[in-house]
Length: 241
Image (cartoon, rainbow, N blue to C red; front, side):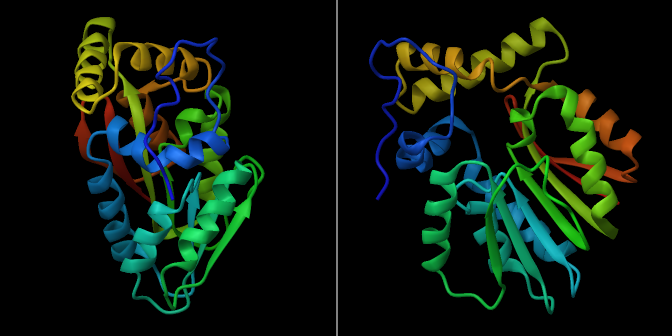
């Protein structure tokens, strides 16, 4: 059973954010109150996976956390002989993800793996999902991971990529940040919680601008990239090989 996110509700010596057991316990509440449109993003990623899934192929959920996107993909896949491979580097997340998946019956097999996505091989893939995952990868490693995904995708395969983004200049970025903080206030977070969470995450999540994402995907070789969702500084896109 998950609870309400109050991790940063009391003043504390703020450490870098990690997906530890404390976060796992409140993650559904944290994500719903922090990411605008999260439910829409997850459900649509599942529908896109159903659209682009190919028979006899693998689908990857990289940075699967508690398995929301994996479950959404599994509900929408109707092609034969598809296999979902869900990966996360947080042991508490992986254990809870396995429990979540056991609660829903499906004919689509899922393998949940504890591992670093820098080390995971991508093979025979028709869909690769990264839902707010790339932003936690060191910027200097992002192109290599996306290149590996591109090489592992079958022709016609897709990358489903959701990211928190940075505005194209300081003025635009401040506008997006202010709107996001208002969203969090509306969802019950205090000024202390907003401030301490921002301090905790600033060293572990370094965001790119949307133009940086789109240029990098094009340079890697994706033929079509489309942003299908954006609210404030959160967006989701599909890139087709």
